[in-house]
Amino acid sequence: MMIIYKKIGNRIKMLREKAVMSQDMLSQRMGISRPAVSQIESGERKISAEELQKLSHIFHVSMDDLLNPVKEPEVHLHKGKEEKTAKPQMRISVPQKNLQKFKEVLLYILNKVGAKENIGETVIYKLLYFIDFDFYEKYEEQLIGATYIKNKYGPTPVEFVKIVERMMADKEIEKVKSEYFNFPQTKYLPCRKPDLAKLMANEIEVIDDVLNRLSEMNGSQISAYSHSDVPWMTTADGDAIEYESVFYRMLPYSVRAYAEENG
Image 1 (cartoon, rainbow, N blue to C red):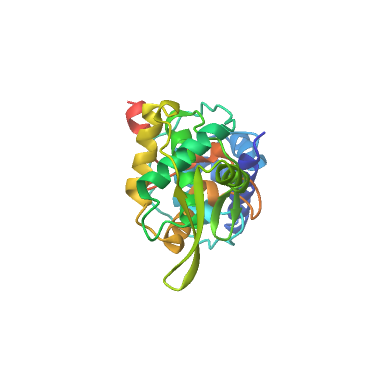
Image 2: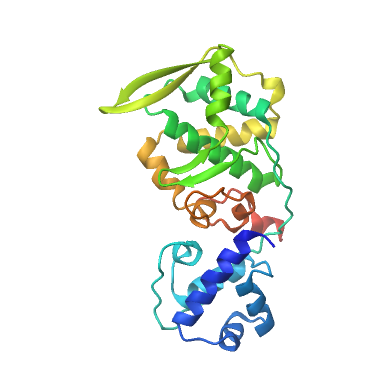
């Protein structure tokens, strides 16, 4: 049983009890059986994006309130119109770290946008996170497969420090201390071009898409943006962020056209 289902199930149970609603009542509103509701609340059953959207309308809470494992939700007891969204297929492959690819992706980022004034270490952390998680959502395969920890500044790649130390020792990148609007900033400058032979076309496509969308943000902006992404919201502080949670993303974070897949 995946931890994320247990977290979401506990959240749903909390909302149901605050709304003074039985499992029977909730099952009728959702159009599923009472045992199915019980299984969802216990984390024994996967819940679809369509069912999450229904619950958001039933309890009149935002997706943030529904998925956030920390914040206390506000529940309003009035009826709302339910909407349906496409149900994603949950075909999951467990990501494995590819440290060599980590180096090439980092060099690709630095060569393409590293010279921008806003691109410091914090921004790089988040760009790597979105590259990894966007690729996983879109292709159900790992790109880097790094481990990202949830902290108050957003997702942080655990392997980053050691990989950067090795790259500096090998004279592949250079670390520079600077300032950005009077705040200390750590920048990395590439000392070589990335080996594009080690990056597939679809990997480069995802990397470019993330850089085009997010590389103009500064550290504060991209950190705040990452805080509204479902994988970050459904993770407790200090825990590793689960890749499987990307399949519960909503716009503007989701990069996969589920509706087209389902006809």
